[in-house]
Image (cartoon, rainbow, N blue to C red; front, top):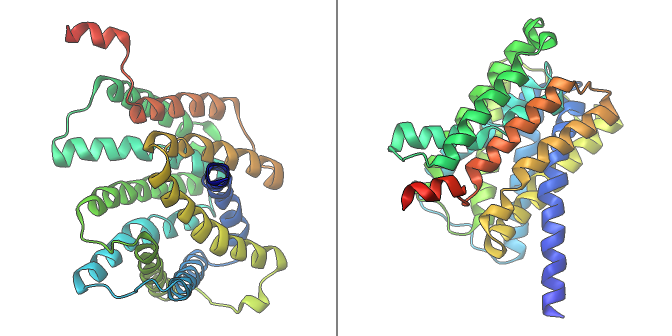
Length: 305
């Protein structure tokens, strides 16, 4: 019974990181067409952070952290959520949700390159192939005529790239930072502090705030789904899987999320999926696979003999 129950939880967790995270691009796109982007992201993360604190209290999980851990969670929240997510939401005003998800799937490529430039980590042969394929895939993705010809799309595309850099550097930062040992508490502090930062960004940009009661029904539902499922359920599932299955299996969400986002954007928002986008996605995601895999091609094994 125990094995059966655990297997069911693993399947549900994979469903969460595959399809729920993949659907957040659609939900953010729906909401940002009506709400200011930084206000939208702020409301999402402040609410999610507070809910996590309430759940942690209910589960009797201590919320006390050190000043150093508070500073580090604040910085991690800026890298991942304030800039890494908030600016992506802003960019969704100008680019399709599927395009954004596909560009973001290049994140492992940038992490690898930053580790090489900042930490001197050697790029393995399989990863090197992945880097080449990733660069080709990104070029095919962003060089499409309908994107290059649209100035707003180019701006959105460039801002997403800087968000990728923020996520990549944040990944290197948290790997060495002193953070709360409980991942649930860690997430709560990151989301809450990032939400406050996003609120300040919203005020600085002069965004007009509105009551949730004034939002349309589809935006209200989008926010509820983003807070409960996109922020709390999916991230908890992600951390559960990291402790239950191999990291390589968890990393498969990198391949699935953009496909889910592209299909949902095409079906619900009538976003166009071009042949070049499909070709770029195939090459880019193949490159991400080569970066993540621990396998070695037989040709490289021969050189080791």
